[in-house]
Length: 110
Image 1 (cartoon, one colour):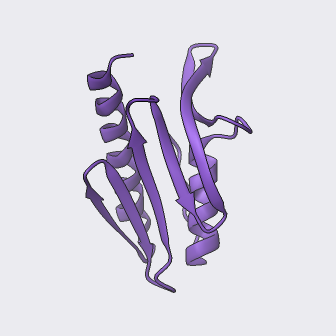
Image 2 (cartoon, helix red, strand yellow):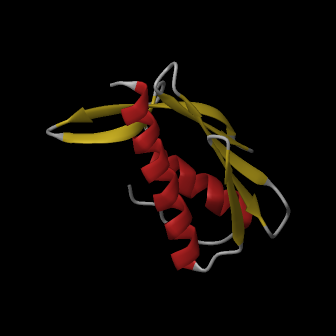
């Protein structure tokens, strides 16, 4: 995948995350700047950061639970962002991080 396609896919993903937060009504603010999406939990000010790494074709997630790397992987025609170590979905890990840090219920599905 070339860098332009990677960047477009990440832009679309970050937009989906923003829309999910807006639609859910949770008290999580976000700022998208310079290839980084920063989520700030109003409850305690803790942050979750998603950053693009085009040279590695990865997305990195930093949360209180740790730092994680994700690559696009797929089977049966379904390509998803998966943890490079555990193979867990980014959507599931982001859901868990937001719920743990904000104490609010939100579900990401991308």
